Image (cartoon, rainbow over all chains, first blue to last red; front, side, top):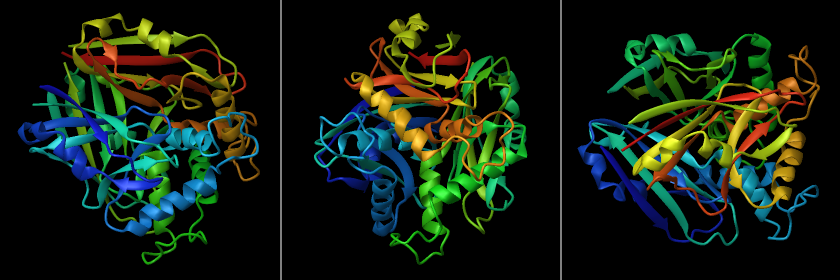
Length: 139
Length: 139
Length: 139
């Protein structure tokens, strides 16, 4: 069984945001899968997806602090600068974190650990709305 | 054909550890798949999975050295510090390396390169046992 | 429906290279898939795959600059040095970016965003030819 949906997220401010609830709500067919996989994909190159701690907002703030430090806006050696000081750094962060997640499905639910949540990582100051493609398969 | 198993790994010390043998042993159904994919997923946010060189233990020690340098324990700007000096760094490392691997299966075996092995990346000093979900599909 | 092909890429110089066209050409069965996933896997530990901006060559040059800065060749703390100054750095970069991509397929095509292209990330000075395993599934 294959199902595919598009999910458009409203614009979020730069930073790391929990979107587990939105993803699950956009794929009601999850409930009918005994064993399977859910693939979550972002169709952009300056935002990304990751899985991390779903409880403390300070963890998500620390992600933003760390990645701004590791990949500075307007880094002196960047050549690609015409789209703003946050653009090239956003591309690098997007590849460090990655454009997709593949998540196990068991008994109609995502088989995540207790503390795992899906993060939308918005790396631009004005990223606008972001489009995800969700692909579910299983039996 | 879909198969899913849970695999609980005994506690490992902080660092990078080869677990290819454990993963393959936990999925005997691999042998019956002509073409497929094996998905390996870790249900934690302070340990991760990656694929890298399977021969030299010094490569795995260099991974530990590099990631400790790139994401220092108790980094001065971390706000999330109440769970110990290694906790927030572990969350960041986990997202840099990622929570899952998807591996091609061919003729009853993982179609890995000669030098590729699965690493369990333990980012905490006392991570305890770690739980993996293995999902195999194919024909 | 499952299809698997091997794709051997000619040697590329160290850096980031667009290979979307080669990957699609190596999997003609894509055209017959309504809904599915394409898995692209590299069988090496010193080269990697990522998805990023497909238009400006300066973005790919900035990737090379950034990763050389973040993971320096011959970093003083590396113990695994017998295979050359670029070897251990290449292993780390390969794990930061990852060995595979899973891409949604819709109506016979990759459902990528407008600006997304597949990068072969060659982290070695003389990497030689690189082997990919492409696995397509869908209906």
